[in-house]
Image 1: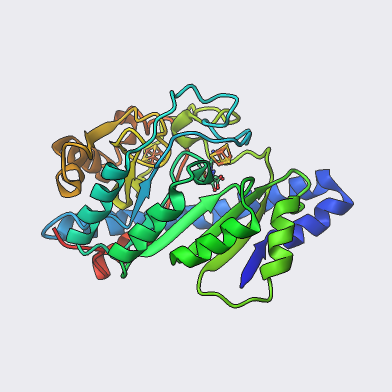
Image 2 (image 1 turned 135 degrees about the vertical axis):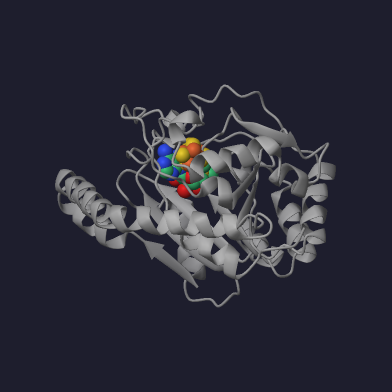
Length: 316
Ligand SMILES: C[S@@+](CC[C@H](N)C(=O)[O-])C[C@H]1O[C@@H](n2cnc3c(N)ncnc32)[C@H](O)[C@@H]1O
Ligand code: SF4
Ligand code: SF4
């Protein structure tokens, strides 16, 4: 099964692009205002619950960036191919397997993302890497996000065969139409039954989203010093291609790095003293004291925090 997101917006867009964009932005603002107040309260409660646990619960999701480049041009993304200054780095197969084996020792059953700040299909080892992850972590949820530009019918079939749980195709196109290679895949597979859940998200290439700690090229850092808590450092374990571990998925350059998978096991990095200090700052609504976070506009909810308390994703 393949589902498509944003079909309705696409229909309006085809009549009047400007009206559609304005409606989308008004809609987003209303949702934000409605959710914001209750989310802040719920998040505070969930973070307090985390600190009542005997040990810091293991993260909800891991992101593994097997290679650090992208071929996309999204104007909201700091690592689009026109801006990315990172030298090309490829994680070795040895280190990739080391991460997966470590997760298996922890009996990890959370989410394994085979991407981070990159386009994962640029790495032609990605299929064997996913198969390895799936075979070693049968209880986990295995996810891939791709911009789909390199996707062919053959690669789509290979992804199904890896045992991947969820594939999200971020189909970037300012007219919100399916790019031709994705359309072909959709036409061929839409009626077929397969275990992998697949969603095609029709997305604008040029859109204003979050400022990602101030790194998004089309959105300014926020001026007011933001005190709100953020759940991401409690939920995410982000391994970059150089094997360094970032605070959250917004930190593509690893401005705040806590250790390196080449030298330390996951559980040691997860409970790193510097990391725990940051969690305490977040708990005390002292976001302005965290260099990466002080100008970030991201707000999340406590939903996934409640999940990891109720259903631990692993043991260490
Ligand atoms: C960094 S991309 C990597 C995977 C793949 N290249 C893709 O675009 O699907 C992962 C997700 O981050 C989202 N993203 C990138 N910049 C963002 C921003 N400024 N605000 C919110 N989401 C962003 C992308 O839209 C995508 O859904
Ligand atoms: S959002 Fe994805 S496709 Fe777009 S530039 Fe960033 S990493 Fe590339
Ligand atoms: S506040 Fe922003 S930069 Fe800091 S952890 Fe949250 S999302 Fe990341």
